[in-house]
Amino acid sequence: MVATADLVAQMADIDYMKRINNLFHEFEEAYAFEGRDALSARGIFIFNSAQEMIDGTIGFYENFVLPRLKDLGRMDRYLITFFGEGRNLYFENITANLTAHLIGKAGQRRRLGEILEELGVVSGEKIKQALGQQRSNGSRSRLEPLQLNNLLLQWVTQQLPQKGLGDILIEMKAISPADLRKGLLSQFLPPDLADHLTGREWRCLLEISLLLQHIHINPWLLGQVMEMTTDLLACEASTILLASPDRQGLVVMLPSGLNKNMQRGDIIPVDKGLEGWVFSHDRPALISDKQLEAPVGCESGSAMAVPLYLSGACLGVVELFNKRQADFNEHDLRILVLLAGMIGSTLEIVVSHTACG
Image (cartoon, rainbow, N blue to C red; front, side):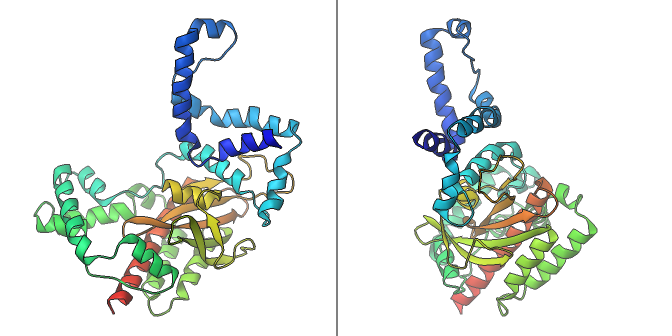
């Protein structure tokens, strides 16, 4: 059990991939002390870089960790009983760690300033100036991200008027309104994603967009939006989670579909599970029951989660479970990032308007 705990806990560490860099530096010290040739002669494999170690992590897990867990009697199956909901949050973290570097930057939310600079319509220096002015103005007129989040947790809505980065850049005559329009569209709907959306996907996104415009007077519509999302991406369940005031847990706010393991108000630690990994790393991730061997007694299934941004900060997670007849893929992930952006923007407006009122 101790050996199992050591293997599982190390690979489930939310900073596992970052720690590989530190481990490589330790290896380099050993190489310098012992000599690479001498170590190779003893049959010890020599790593040339931390990236080489990271790239080999999946093979390490499949060829070393899983066989060792079997030799140890699969003590890890008792984690299912410990968590009590048919889930193994440690193994979800392991899967997210192993697959995150394969996904790369796909599906990650891009910042408006970054896009405008890439389009060549404004310089990085102008963006820095505008960001400085935004921070200066916002400190007096805008709710802090955590304030917005706490209001959402209480389902109290609020907003204070404030100028965004694009507004300031226009005032500075650094960009035109048309430049800002192009940047915003590229931020929310990347051209390469738009080119690959099917007719059905376009229709569903349009319908969701129309519904989101009315959730300020019909909050129940948000649940319908999540039901439409599960249908669009052909999965069984979904949920929206928001960070607790101390940011140490994620509160289940809106479970929908066949979600048997989550109830409204449940709290998931930020250092456990796929949800916690996505929130802590501020990046999307997906897991598949085919990518890892499920421990005995564990309900296999796939899951996908992306950050939920409010007032420019990651303050929650949107998660989907169990894709039917297939596994989640990068295209699904990018659609969910798009939908989470739509939901986050709408919630911020709803919350802010109520606060002003």
